Length: 121
Image 1 (cartoon, rainbow, N blue to C red):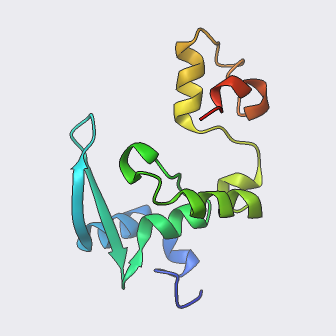
Image 2: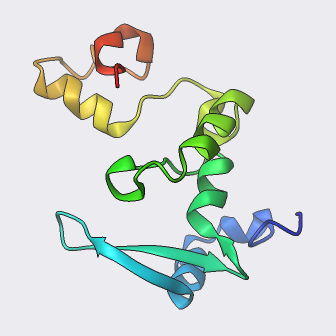
C-alpha cells in the first residue's frame, strides 16, 4: 500500500466495503446513465477512486462519461500489464459493436486483433 492507495489490497476483496466507502464519499454527481444509474466522481481520502481503479487495471475508462479523463491511466495500466491487462481483453463496448455488426460471440473474442476495424477511434 502506498500513500496514494485508497485502501489496502485485502479491503478491495470486499465489494460491499468498497461500495460503502465509495458511496460515502461521492464528491460530484456528473449525470445519470441510460439506465438512470448515478454517474459520479468519488474519492477516498482525496484520491480519485475511478483513477485508482483504472490505473490498477481494475476498471475501464468509459469515455462516454469521463470524456477521456482516465485515458492515460488506462494506457499506463495496459502498458504495464496490470489487472485485466495481464491477459487478453476487449472492452465491452467493442464486443457489443462486433455483435451488432453481425459477429458471433466466438468471433468477437477477447483477442482485439481479431477485429481491428472496431479498434479504430
